[in-house]
Image (cartoon, rainbow, N blue to C red; front, side, top):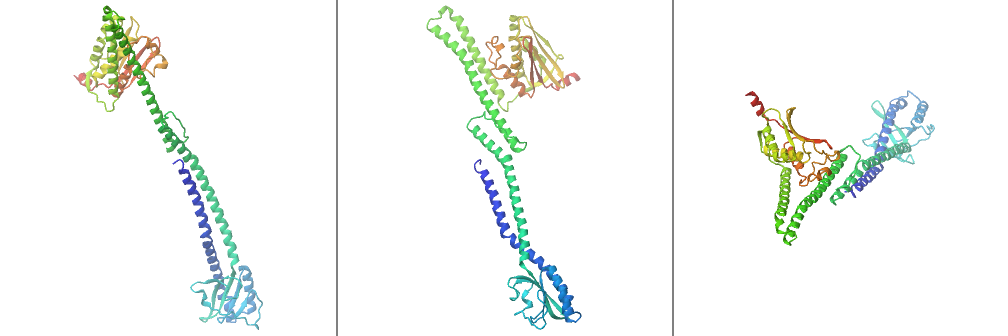
Length: 477
C-alpha cells in the first residue's frame, strides 16, 4: 500500500487532467460555436423579419422609394456588421447594402432557392456562390396580399463568430487550468493529511511485526487517522510492557527458585561427602526443610496469582461478618506478635458488620496485610486494624508504625516479586507476591485498595468492600 497508493492518486490526478483537456478541446469548441451561431442567427432573423414587415414591404406597395430603403438598410447594416439584401423570388437582386443602386444593371443570383434552409431559419454556406467564403445567412419573406413578393436576407461573416468562440474557449482553458491547480492543492492536502500519516503507521506496523515493540511514532492529527496512530502506539507500549514484565517475571521466578535450590543442593552434597558430620544432620535438615517450605509457598503463591488473573474468575460471594474474620485472622498471629512484642489493636464498626464478598479470599487479603505489617514493624510497636463506613462502602485499614515505604517505591509495590531496598534486609523469606495477590483479589471484587506510607514512620493499607443488605435486616430486628 505504501508503494502504490500514492502512485494511484498521482495517476488519478493526471487522468483527471488529461480527460479534462480532451473534453474541453473536443466537445466544448463545437458546442460553443453552435451556441454562438444559433444565438447570432436568432438575432439576425428577428431583424430580417422586422425589415421585411416595414422597409421592404413598402417597396412593393409603393409606400417608399428604393433610395429611402437603401439609406435605412445601410445604417442598419453598419450596426449589425452584416450585409443586407432584398431579393425577388426569381433570384434577382433588388438591393444590397454593400453596393450602389443601379436599376439598369440586372444582377441575378443563380439557382436561388428560398427553401434551401430546410426546416431552419438560417444556413451557413456561400449563398449560392455569391460569397467567396461561407457566411451565416438568415432569410425572411416579404409578403403582400398574402403573396410572397421577395425576400430579405442578412449575411454575417463567420469570422466574427469564430473570434467570439475563441474568446470563450480561452475562458474555458483558463478555468480548466484553475481546476487543475485546485485539484493539485487537494492532492498536496491529501499527501500531508492522509498519505504521510498512513506511511508512518505502515512503517510502525512493520516494526511491530518485526518484534520492535519499543518503536514510537507520532501523528499530529485529531481525526480518525490520529486516533488510529494513538491506538497503535498504546497497543505497542502495552505489548512491550507485557513482554518486559514477562521477562522480569521469568528472571525473578528463576532467581527465587535458584537460591533455595542451591542451598538445598549444597547442604545435601556436604552431608553426602562428609563435610557436615552426622551429628549436625538434624540442624541442616531443618534448614533444607525450611527452604522446601519456601519453595512450596512460592509455588502456591504463583498458582494463586495465576488463578486470580484468569478471566472469568468465579468468586464465591456470601454475606459474612467481616468483624469476625478480622478477629480470627489477627488471632492467628498471636505467637508471632508475642515473639516480637507487637500488639494488634482492633477498632471495629459495630459488633457485627456483614459484607458481600468471597470470605476465603478476603481472609487471605487480611492475612497478607497483617503478615507484612508484622514483618516490617519495630519491636514493642502497635498494629491497628480499623473499619469505617463512608458513602455506603466499608473501608478496612491495616496500619503499622514500621520502616515505611520510600516514596519512589509506592507505585511499584504491587508488581510481582518487587521488594524495596528497605524490605530486602527484613523480608528474607518473602516472595514479593503477597501485595500482588492482594491487589488482584480486591480488583476481582470490583473494589479499590490504596496505600499511605512515610519512610521511617509507618504504612497504612486501606481497601473497600460492599456492605451487605443483611445489616439493614439486623438493624430492623
